[in-house]
Amino acid sequence: MPAIELSISLKRTEVISGESLALLAVVTNRGPEPVEIQTSPHVPITYEFRAQDGEVRYRTSQQAYGKALTAGLQLPPESPSFTRLEPGQLRRLHQDPALSLLAGLAPGRYVLAARMPAGAVEIEAAPLEIQVTAARLRSLASLYCPYQNAMVNVFDHRDAAGASWVFFRETISVQLPAGVAVRVCRAEKGVEDVAAAFHVAPRLEGRWLAWAEDGALCARKVWGGTVMTEVAPVALALGQPRLTQPGFQMADGSGVFLAAGTAEGRARVQIVKVTPQGAGASAPAALYQSLPERVLARWQAGGPEPVIQLVWADRAGEQTRVFVRAYNLAGKTLAAGPKQIHARAARLLALELDPLGEEPGWAHALFEAQQPKEGPVYVRIPLSGAPARPEEFRVPAPPKPASDWAISGLETGGLLVLARIEDRIWVASARGRDWEPLTGPVGEIQRLRLAASTRDYWGALWV
Image (tube, rainbow, N blue to C red; front, side, top):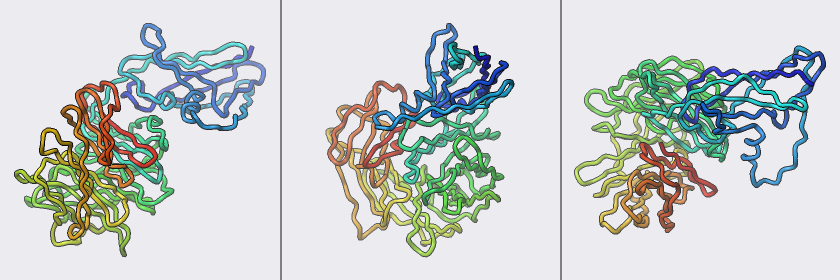
């Protein structure tokens, strides 16, 4: 009988639901004879998450993960390959059962067990106890990256001890459940806001993310589950800083983030450029008379130099007004003041923007219905303003009162609309698709996002 020993180890045993469980599995040959273990197309280790009473709550493996990702595809079978282990030799295997699971673990206490075949028998590693808690989010940034065909999320979590952590989650292409949250950094003084960088060119490596902490902008570059680059915090000359959405990652690998805040009694904006060599912030530039609740950003590369357009909404009495203002990468405003591009006597339900859409560029807005039996109004607003005219679409009236509205803002998105109706999330379209339920009961919703929306697929995120 082959004398093979299996062991597993984790850096953290207290995690949030959906967090990575990247572990080290070590297979050691303790016998006097050489043995072979399968290493491709998968390692035959099965992971089980057992309740305290021994009941198996979840089971997963690399093989099950691969089958789930390729379901429905006609692929030729892969021949297995093996690695030879001499007596006393070991093989280290980096695996992530949370990734293979394709679902977040429900909060609770588990025993993580690992099993693998060894000849005619099955061996099991010494189990590990893990504690899974629900995420407590304060800030959430979501985007769809067309160059990687992936949904990207950055959020902060405050644990039971009061410590704030920044997390990053990126899906594997269009496989929306295929991804885990990676714990990037502990924010010692708390997180005020977060942002992720949108790739403005293809084949870029890693992704910059940023957060505002104690009046400074902090940034990291992450690739997969690894932090590639850390930069020192950059102090912002702004009060109440919040990050515009999204940031941008340029072809040279550097990142650009914008922070809006107050200075000298008015709303101003600073541009922060981050590189592996460090980061620097521009001087504050004028934005608006008051600080908008949320500011959206769009990358415009058609001219002699890149331009970033900022879009926001302002509620004045019964009227909602939408503004745009452009800046160069040095942080200089390119106009004497903000340009009003739309006004409507209705409450704004959602405002989004395609960060890299084709010219001339459009903002997407959803406004509340004015009559009880009418649906909301979906408006595509040209960023160029007059004489270009907005395009209006009437969304079907929801079957019951709705809340927590969301749109994607992507030009390829089919003008989809999400809403919470009672205890479920429903979907409709401004192009005539009537409301239909998307989920079963989901409980209380803190945030609802339609972050990915294309002709081929779309994905929703709710917390």
